[in-house]
Length: 151
Image 1 (cartoon, one colour):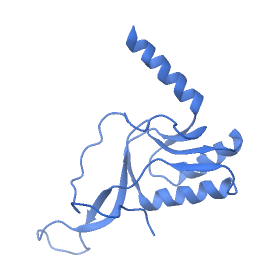
Image 2 (image 1 turned 135 degrees about the vertical axis):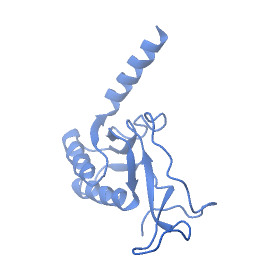
Image 3 (image 1 turned 90 degrees about the horizontal axis):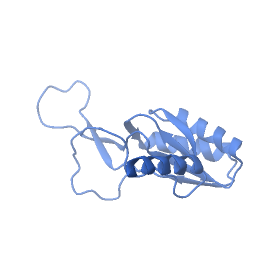
Image 4 (image 1 turned 120 degrees about the horizontal axis):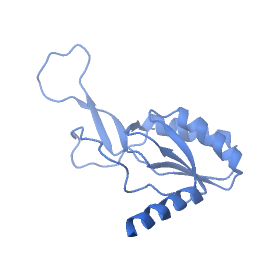
């Protein structure tokens, strides 16, 4: 069963714009290693599930995995060979809106080389480009940026 919200108030949403970088979810909060998006895009519920399966198989169900994105946004499609007009199509799939610097997945409890390989395999399942990150690296980067802002 794909990831999707249990209940939604409005079924049909507009597409919106993906401007700027991620302000929320841009630090590794739970694990030691993370998979970080380097571009913006929509990540579908089937992609998230495929990445999760790839990661858990790669680490042979050892360690811990956190999924930091959830597909809240419905994407509508009209049926094939339908005439123009007659309103908006029905919701077909659910996507998560991802911006650059967003941490998509986190891992802990396994060696770094094993985590790197597992997150690399997961990244291949996603429609956005990604990079591997360590918790310490992101914290150092954040501290350096806050130090520049204080000057």
